[in-house]
Amino acid sequence: MWHLAQLNIGRLRAPVDDPALADFVANLDPINALADATPGFVWRLQTEEGNATAIRPFPDDLMAINMSVWESMEALADYVYRSAHTAFLRRRGEWFERLREVYLVLWWIPAGTLPTVDEALARLDHLRTFGPTPEAFTFRQPFPHPDGPAITADERNTCPV
Image 1 (spheres, rainbow, N blue to C red):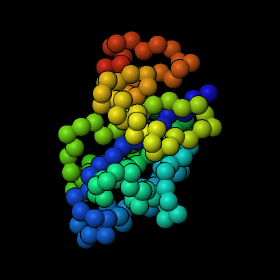
Image 2 (image 1 turned 60 degrees about the vertical axis):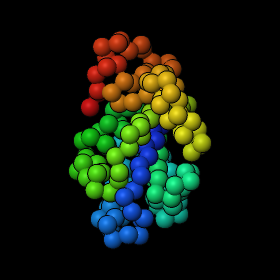
Image 3 (image 1 turned 120 degrees about the vertical axis):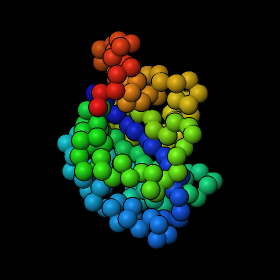
């Protein structure tokens, strides 16, 4: 059995404690609670505070990460694009700078395992270097889990959400 891991990164427009990010910070707990309660949710990266804002794997302190694991692509897509998270996502530009590089990567992991931050960053680098492959892909160009049926080129180029 396989689960879907996801990583997305962003460069904050200001430090987390800046008033410009107050609405973002105020919504973290409700949005994370929504993820935790969504069918198909497995795990998310977090500190004792319940979010990942203090995790800084980049030299730039304004770079933030979000990483989670889901039972399926559909479960993650339902949360991201068909829940209250969607309105939060639409406001991303208020809190994060626009990145010129790919900032979201998906990949399959064996059920019962959890990705590391280093692994996730390596998957993002793989996607940036080689484009979508079975090792690192996107919603727009997905790949099936290793035991799944093949996806045709037409299906791969169609966003499932």
